Length: 378
Image 1: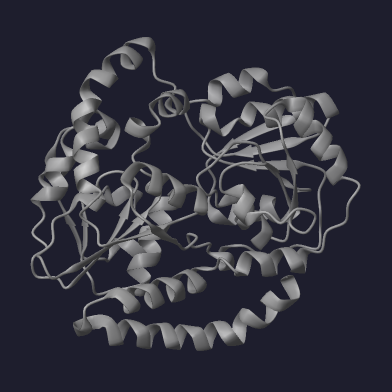
Image 2: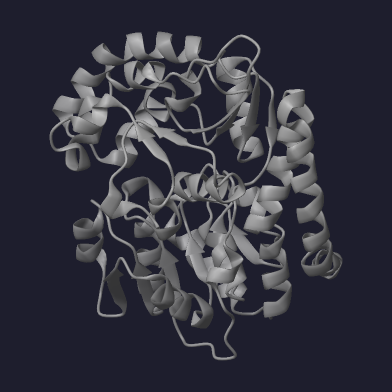
């Protein structure tokens, strides 16, 4: 369950009767709210070992999304970090694409290869396969009528690569997953998939340098390397259920967020648990961390600079209610309101009024529960 999957879950909550078209769905991996959804998959669903080898089939995804017959629909809302924007629509239908980033593996190839930890053979061979995918992606990028980006960083990429403007709506944070605690324990926390580009090594090295305890929750291909870097004050807990994540998030001194992300939900999830963040000043963190109010930044991607930021952090005081209120600006309800409002403004008349009516209902709920606190938080 990464950020894109949580967006799909929130989209389903807003439109529970709408079918979900996706190339592949693995029932054992779906969250509870999606298991009862009307999910319609492509023929790729029947390919062997899809749960383990889905990356190996990368050249088939364009055919899979173009296979869907969406001619019956007035409004199509897609969530795409790669292929979904390429679905076909009838001429007078409206397609709005929520874009997490332009296809990273073709437009930021070096960055993608580094983050996935590919070997030499893959690094040499992949570019020969990607030139046709790049042509398809440019063509597919013209299918949506409108783009929504998850951050200004991504909106700038959409403009630079696709030549399209994008409206920014941050992804949803499930604030109610997290609960604050009056207890603070003496450890720092990492919540992350363990991938090289996440730069968890910086957090480990900084905590070793300062003799600080660090708890790492998450798993991934970089775990073995990171465990070799660690000492006896660094604990790896692997993937954990929400209740355990909330326990550690609510009691940590701060969340360490040392990588550069397109958006990055973990800092806001830590804020929802009443805890501040120490983040690298780059990517989406610039848009979600308020320096001195919800966290502190470090400016160079090295462990010494992060250690200096930890030292600065420890001299400051933090109000957990201010942190929680900040996270509520990004709550699922706020996301749904902004999406419904945007879709209602661009949708065909056949469904625009229903969307705007839904936005008005959510606005009343938000006015009572969130907006008054936002004034305090700002």
